Image 1 (cartoon, rainbow, N blue to C red):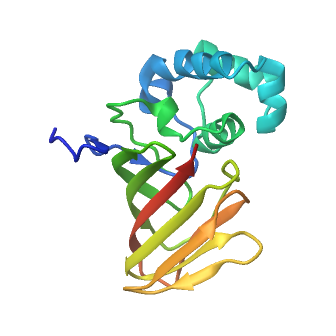
Image 2 (image 1 turned 90 degrees about the vertical axis):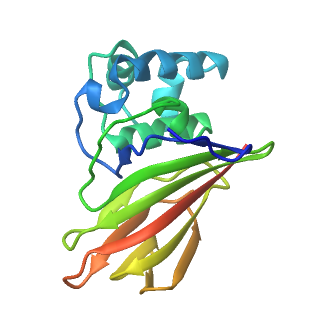
Length: 197
C-alpha cells in the first residue's frame, strides 16, 4: 500500500456500490457492528432513535451492531447519514470488501480528511441496465462525477442530470439520488463525495 498525501489516506482498492446484500466478511468482517455501536454511543443516540432517524427497523439496527444481520449498502448509507458521518467511518481504514449494487460498482481509491470536510474518491463503473436509487446523505453532502466513457444519468431522483465523456455532474446529495447508464455502453467515471463536518 502506498502512502497518500498528508491530507489523505490511501486504500487498498476496495469496491463499494450503492446497494446489495453482503455477508458480514464482505463488509468489514465483524468490525462494522462495533464501529457502529461506538459511533452511535459517541453521538449520544439510542438504538431506537438512530433506527427512527435512519428509517430502518430497530431489530435491523440491533442485528447490524451484533453482527447477526448482513447489511446492504443502502442501509449503511442511511445509518451514516443519520449519524452525520462518511460511510468510511463504518468501513474502516483498510477495507478490502467487494460490494456491488444494482447499477453501481465503485472502488474506493482514497479518503481525504481535512479540518472541516472529508472527501471520498471512487473509481466508478455503471453497466447498462436498471437505475440504482441511493438514499439521501446527511445535510450538506455533495457528489461530483466526471464521466470518462459512456453516458451517465445521475443526480437527484426527481431531476437527474446527463453527462457524456469529459463532462462533469455535481449535485446536493442530501436527497435520494440515482445512477444509470444511458444506452448499451457501460459508464466509467470518477466520483468524489464531499462530507462537511
